[in-house]
Length: 305
Image (tube, rainbow, N blue to C red; front, side, top):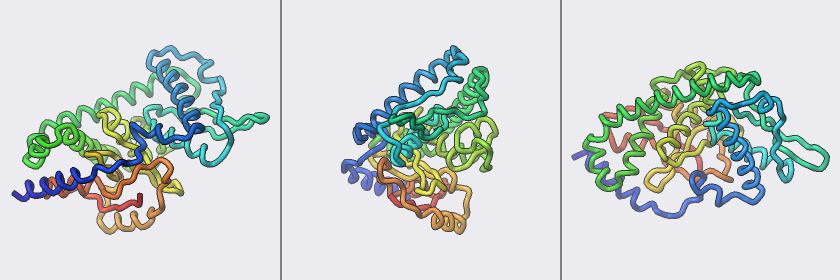
């Protein structure tokens, strides 16, 4: 009865939140300026073509030795941050590293560079792509196995009757950050701003945690973005479920309440409002309220919109 009461409250709350949201995920491009669309589309085209050659193992040395420049209207901090946003929210291109702005005459460009872990060597791209795919398969196997155990729980079966697709996404999102908490060691390394550190070292920090969460949400067709504090000191995710955006910080779960409060106070900086959807609730607390004592991972962090 306690679980069903929680469930009723959750369904009622979610059903009432249907107002339009300025989203960044599936409909984010509608909110870009013409200049932003130009940069985003150019970078998407370049990386899709490059990624295809990596997967097909048809790379040439010229692919790595040529300087790749993306034309931009002007060199300003806004567009530079926009490129960083592209990098953070496309972690499947794990070799990508923002090289900064370049001016040649009157023309302005973004210099496309890659992490030097690949040493301009096509075989290393193939090697690390294999490791990346192995990591994704490992998380996917974990999620699918655990999903079968969870989907028939009382507190989920009733919700399935109301919102089957969203309930499946909710459970899978829960299991992805469970996997990260249980299997990825928190430790800084040379490539800890990318998912590279996870499949190469088995460790990561907030940025790489958020990258893996984003990749898996993409796989499960869950709207998700990576956001970070204005000073760039911390990164986490926002995820859309039941037509509402939630904060999801996979790094905070291992903290005690006291440490989490200190952490929250330290990073209580405003998030960039240019692209980030509004999210005032925490996904972990929603799951805690729904599942009750069976789920003991509760984030108490409260980030600003």
